[in-house]
Length: 157
Image (cartoon, rainbow, N blue to C red; front, top):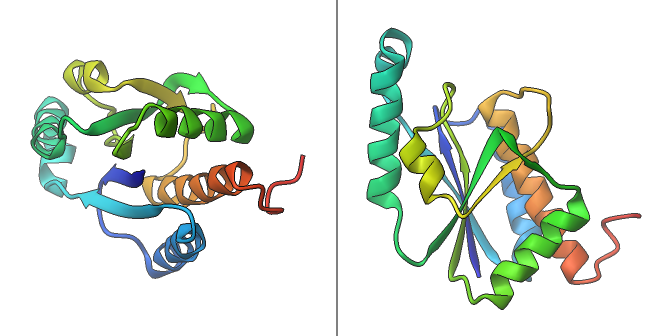
């Protein structure tokens, strides 16, 4: 199963990129993974929230394919611990999912259309994090989940 992390926003700072590359490299024995950054106009996001969300929706829907299994990360989503993340990933593998997409929406959330296209909605925390940091956290949690599934000693219970 291929894994893609989609994120609305700007390119990463170098230290974030370095961390993401680190975890992506560690996942290589088990799965392929990539980060897709969907950039929107900064001006649109600050002047018209509804328009920004609509533009983000259009970008996401244009990229979303029938073989994608979309998981939306949202503060109102279901919170999972790391073992539950790995169980959810295993279920996707068992279902024959070709591409698992984990979506980090825009600063103002996502439209109802995107929410309805998501197969699941998860929350990382009740805290709010900057998008770039969320990308790094998700990269680490994907690696952690795969290490759990492959009996690697990385995760300690």
